Length: 324
Ligand code: PBG
Image 1 (cartoon, rainbow, N blue to C red):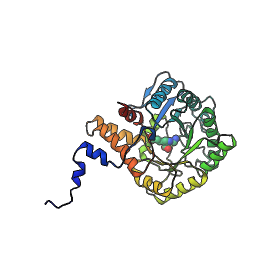
Image 2 (image 1 turned 180 degrees about the vertical axis):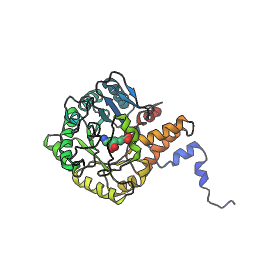
Image 3 (image 1 turned 45 degrees about the vertical axis):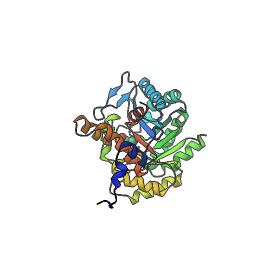
Image 4 (image 1 turned 135 degrees about the vertical axis):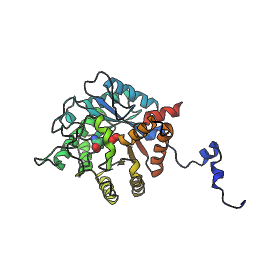
C-alpha cells in the first residue's frame, strides 16, 4: 500500500488546504445589487429574499457607505418607481427614483465603491417587459434601444461609473456606447449583460421590483438550452464595445462563464441571481444546509468557472465576514 499516490496528503489540515487552494476571491471583486423605492420612508422586506430589502434613499446611502467601507467593488442599483406606465417614463425622469439614487449614492461613496446601474425598462413598465411594445405586443427592439440610450446618458450624468444594459435588445451596446460618447461620457464603463437567459431563477426579483410580467421574456432573453448562441451574443457585444461581459444567471450557467473566460480577454462578470439566493436562504432557514458554507462555496465556484466580478446579494455580508 505504501507506493500508491496519496492526494489526501494535500488535504490533511487547514493550513495545507489553504496553501494549495487554487481559487480565492477579494471583496473588490464583489458587487452588491440593491433596491430603492420611490417615496419610501421605511425599508420594506422582500419576502422571497429574506435579508434583502427595498431601501429608502437614506438606508441605501448608508448601505453604500458600508459597502465602500467593506471594500466592495461596486453597488448595482435598481429603482422602484411610484408610477409605472407602458413606456416606463419613470426611467428617464431626471427626478425619477433611479437617477436620484445614483446621485445620492455617488455623493456618498465617491470613487470608493463603483456605482453601477441596470439599464432596462422592466422596473418601470406597467406590463413588466424590458422595453416598449409594438401594437401587436412584442418588444420593439429599436424603439427600446433609444429609450436605453437616454437612460444610460442620464445615469452617467447622475454619476454612474458603470452602466449595465440588461434588456437583451439587438444593438444595445453599440447604441449606448455611441450615446455616452456623444454626450461626453466616454469614460463611463459599459458592462454588458451579454449572455442573459430567460430564467425561472429571476422569480424573487419580480417581487423585489414589484413587477407583474405579462407573458414571458423568451423573445429577447436566451433559451437555457443554448451555449453557441451565448458565444454569438458575447462576440457581438465585444464588437459593439462592451468593456465587461456578463453572464446571468450564474450557477446553472457556469459552463457559459467558462466559455466566456476562454473566448475573450475582457473581465467577465457573473450574476448570482435572486432565485439562487432564495434557494440557499430557504434551505438554510429549514436547517437543511449550512448557510455560511453555501455562500462561500457559491462565490468560490463562480470564481473557479472563470468570473472576475460577481454580483451577489451576499456581497456585503461576505466582505464584512472578511473584516472580522
Ligand atoms: C432586468 C434585470 C432582471 C434582473 C436583473 N436585471 C430581471 C429580468 O431580466 O427578468 C434579475 C436579477 C435577479 O434575479 O437577481 N432589469
